[in-house]
Length: 198
Image (cartoon, rainbow, N blue to C red; front, side, top):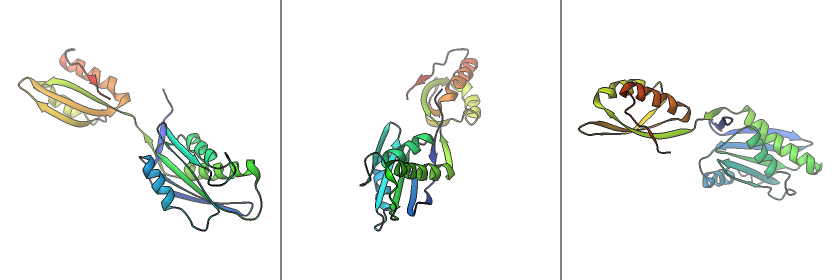
């Protein structure tokens, strides 16, 4: 079983000083790359020396060093996102140069550390993988299923009625599909077949 992934409950911010340089991390939940880039533009500070950022949405990711030496800013921010097991998340770290050079290692630690601490302190929610299923039931079994939807954490997406019963489409956590199959097998004496759609 894969490790749980998390998303932010809302936008969050953290301020840190490292050897007289000021670092401000802004993070937010996002659903698309366009939303990530819009957030990057929205939190940009015109007087900052650099705006480095990274985002992850499932298997899609991108990062940017904004003039810092290659690999010292954007990639450590992405590593902070991945290290906190975050998804659907963008982090922008702005830096105001304070006059003391940090070196490549110092920059990577400062950018990555500021991003990681911002995410660590933020309110998060576990992302639950949903599965869409469809099946047909006789009318006599419908009340039982409707009574158990909350227990299965299932959302009824569609219900079409015919002379023989109803065809239902549900979205439920992937971990609940086996329980739904058992419930329907018991209720219909094995005559209900559940089709996984996505």
